[in-house]
Amino acid sequence: MCRSSRCWGSFPRRCAGIGAPVAIGEVEGHVLHPLVMSWVVRLHPVVVAVTVPRRRQNGS
Image (cartoon, rainbow, N blue to C red; front, side, top):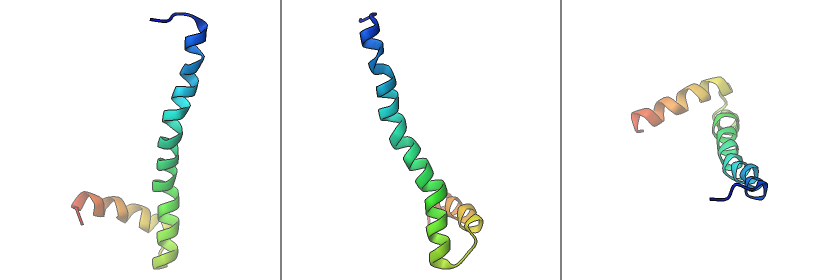
């Protein structure tokens, strides 16, 4: 077990390495997907944002 400050220096980098893909996925799923789908089907983004998760829960 390393207790020196050198080992703890990599901790923020590891958190950023894990957090960055998660944050990108969240933004993509909750912001970009409804915007793109609203343009494709010509609906308001809020309508798309509400119906997409419901369809995923129903399995269709």
